[in-house]
Image (cartoon, rainbow, N blue to C red; front, side, top):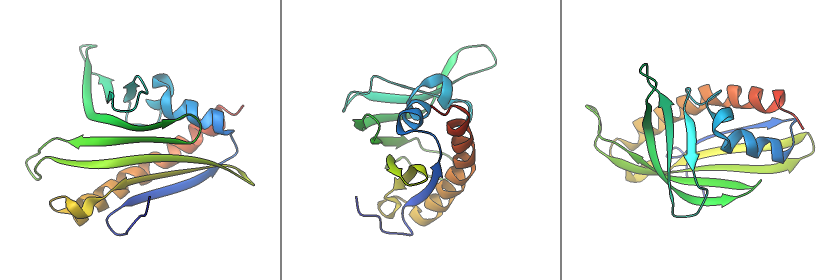
Length: 151
């Protein structure tokens, strides 16, 4: 995947946890909610299948916050989604891709998160900057979760 900045939001970090641990933290709902705005990832992991990030509301009901389709589910390597952005007061509906890439490295495991291509989306640069801020907030919590769960 070729990334053409500034239209891709990209963050990366190295954790001392194993690739297997990182994969669990990225995919198991009970771990995902610890760093992803209290949302759990729900998916079968089958390419082409729907996926969603859900959270419980104050009534205890599950609410979908992000709807997606699975693009890649390569255990321990690559997790990718087509994200369906709903229209808001500021923006029209849009679609982006979200990739989680995991690789072994000398220090442990590298996690790379990339979302885009915002170049083809209305107000793309603005939306990309907002997305970059969001992933900048999530990444330290993701790293912390991985390092706490080390295997």
